[in-house]
Image (cartoon, rainbow, N blue to C red; front, side, top):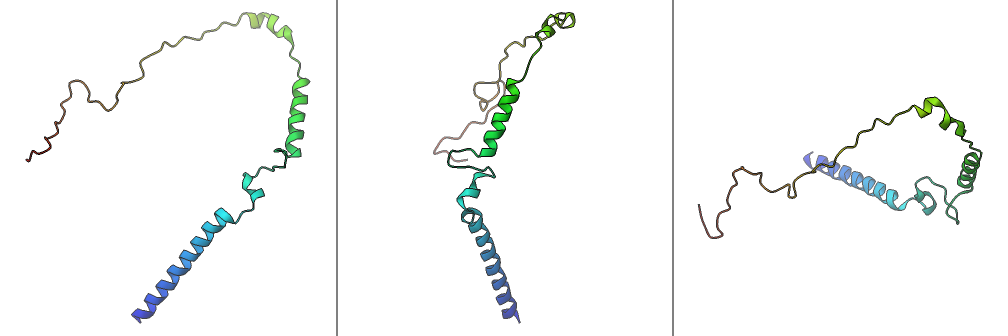
Amino acid sequence: MNTQSSSMKTWIWIIVIVVIGGGIFFYFYGQDSSSNTGGIGVTATGASSVDQTQVLSLLNQIRLLHIDSQLFQDPAYTKLYDYSVDIPDQAVGRSNPFAPLPGEATKSKPAAGATR
């Protein structure tokens, strides 16, 4: 009976290894080259027609944009004040972060031929 359970475990391990191997194979080699683009449709020119229409639509929206320059003469805008503060440059850290700190005791390494 021990031989039968050993044989059963062997077959289970073989099946697990084959399934994992098949999964790895299909993950790397099972996809065709057109689906390897990460979900982006790519044509021979490098961009799909949907992407081109979206770009053209956005460009048209930008062209139609109109900024009213009266905003900059508004008294509420001219009364605005910049309260930002300049932050001075500060030292970031030590030149060698692994060097021992000053005042810290260091362990000396024994000589090459020395024994304890």
